[in-house]
Length: 334
Image (cartoon, rainbow, N blue to C red; front, side):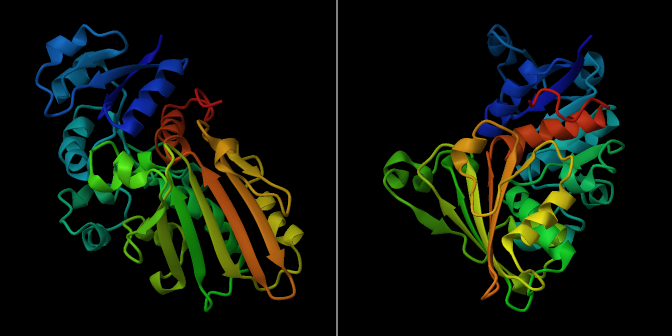
């Protein structure tokens, strides 16, 4: 018997990706919760695919939904989460609403007050490679952003191992496909603006920066992040530069990752000098990591690649759901 799980925001790119993954999952049944502005639920209920139901606590209880995914804007997630938890469902939120430890961080970077600060104390940051022990018991998981997923999986092992010259800082040159900007139409993501083009945006003030700082342990002045828009549908590739200390070879650098990620099902490491690319991770939940080091100068580089809609959003959300429901972590993802 499959467990019913709800999805709010299934019309967006991440939500649609989530529906596709859950429809293939052997032990859950997706139920599409209508968006708040979608009043005509009767007309869409006749369409093929998962059942479409109103988004309210009464329906959550009646359907016995064990978990609800929120692929919604922050404000909607903050509005819905308390009632869903009260109705007995657990929540995996794909927005930024519950990714931070305190409301001040959210307010500083998102320029709006956090309306549910009390829930931040219990929310667990859903990066399984680092918070796996806390996720199974969580009622509320804040699914990480796409850029921070690729960045933290590459950077945190370096900081933990103490091999970064932090006075020299870390530079993260991050490139993403257009779907990372969401489905809402805008001039900057229109076809004519993006095709045959390549541009940087939100320099020094990208909203994903505090997620990297909180998880990696870096200070803001030690981390320079630049997001850039590729004329592609999906994928993130981040090139991370730093000055290494205490390392004599790329093999030693790779060994740090081999030790930290031994047994991790969704981390794939490349031999020194070989680098991942977007084609290798497309439509997968993998994070591919490659390293190189110039021992003479101490210059080091790590490349981290993910699919922004899978490991950067929907796939990681399902990975978290599996842990919360006591299922094998890779179920529905391999």
